[in-house]
Length: 246
Image (cartoon, rainbow, N blue to C red; front, side):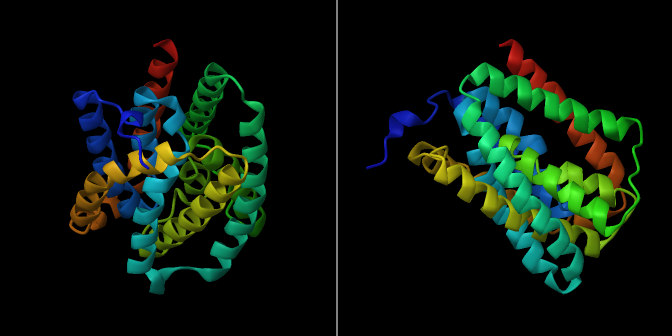
């Protein structure tokens, strides 16, 4: 039986979570990544135990919907290479989560990951696109996605100078498959609870509205892929640092 007391009872915080999920769904659908960048800090502030599991549960459907919408644009070879890397990274990430017994230790690691992502973006780190760099990005994506629900930015760095539906579709497909794998590994280690699914259910209205609105905005975001990536990464980093001080 579901325990309603497991949910935050503070209405303003719940509203913040809904708004964050709404914005995150728009960004994820539009550029192929970014759900965790926006939704993660809000959920971390509400309850650290909701990250990364709730972020992955709520974010995976929007990535799946966007991938299905643009399925004819998915680059299968690149999807395969990145996904193999994500499986390996998810295994490493889940083992790391088992070792993180302290919530404070998790927040420190969470913030460190964000700062690295932002730093690499700000210095205009441009890895040369190749099967090797895509595989490596997939491994890093699997680690960060499993630990912090932040699987998109490592892959987005590889694709940052590319534009259009093929990039968005391939990213969404990779993030979707990776999210399922990460969630499976976390479940095996007992890091996904009934509370996580219960809260994720209450966030679905924000998700559904964001998906609907994204249909009218994804063309706009296509033309501004890099600025959106950097902007959401910065917001995510500041939100995470704030949460470590509370």
